[in-house]
Image (cartoon, rainbow, N blue to C red; front, side, top):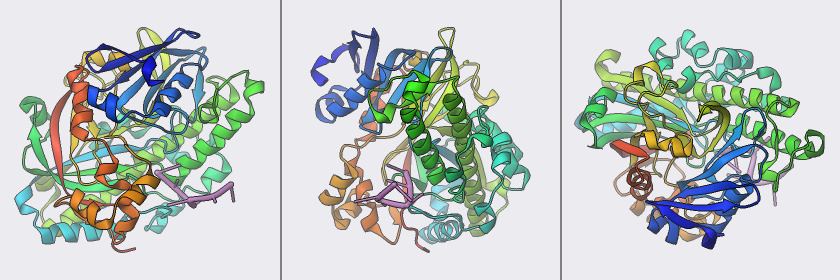
Length: 477
DNA sequence: ATGTTC
């Protein structure tokens, strides 16, 4: 597959699917193209270019790696009228995403002792690790109808946050498609994981703002060098996973009935306006709201922990939500004068300045797109530039894996893991369970972010340096 | 990513 791709401009490789006349674009530096590109991930983009109603180009991001159906770091838009929706092209973890919280706390004031105490308090209320359900009993039995129809405001009105938080969440934490009536029973049974982190690459990170690349925008975002930030990376947990599994199977089984075709199970799809399509979007929207609520409830306990340890009032500490953005989702968007369904899987929406879909407060700058690095490595805040219409306004979502979880577990030891994360404190009692998350199992975040910067699709605003990460089997569990 | 092989 790789040999069929030709470099057509700075960090952009292309091939054409001659049968369907759809282009495939992959954004990679020469180093990423030559050293870290799996042929299978390109084949997955090619497969996506065969679906009904797909709009050229199918896009690969610099953090591309093989996934289920569409690669992670993949974008596929389909025509809203004629096209299909694919559950696998959104991914298992519906609305996996990140939320960045800024503070007015200089990093020097966050002593090791305070940091440990904060992490201890957070982990008491926010479990981490695979399969964990809510520590707070009330969150195990929740009103899915309210989550679908009201979204994050439902919990804010109940006291878990500030009114203004919702203005700094993508779609105000309420996806228009959401319909709890479309959620399969098997998924409803798994909706007991609100206010949990989960496993894999999910985490809560506390760090300090490192470099600032654009003084004006950084200041406007409240990103000041040397100040403490908190980054929350998690999604819809087992709930979204179950929805993806159920609908993927249903879409695959109903191919004849729906008159659709998918080359592989992972891209099983249904016409957007078919029963299966409408129901998937209703369930996906509910899971997306669930994930926004998950990050909101975690935010509440993060704030509580800081308030308790610093013993200052909330205004003094800041603890403001900068932005909360999804990187596994399908959205109805206008591109080139046409309504499309943009599937982003391991891809972050980054709307440029002036784009009408920006939240009101970010109209002039474009909203912040937050790109987490791997455990113990830097993260970035970037904004999209006009040119990123070439990717349906998408940027990468992280660093991207360079090896499978299985291989990473064989390759690295706990000692090597600690060396790789340098001085970052890893709050987990079971480092062994984190070997697949070792930084060297991922690409270099600088290389990945700079690939789109050099291609002039995006602009870095600030770089974030972690001090501590809470993930995997938490300290208390 | 995931009650990591319903």
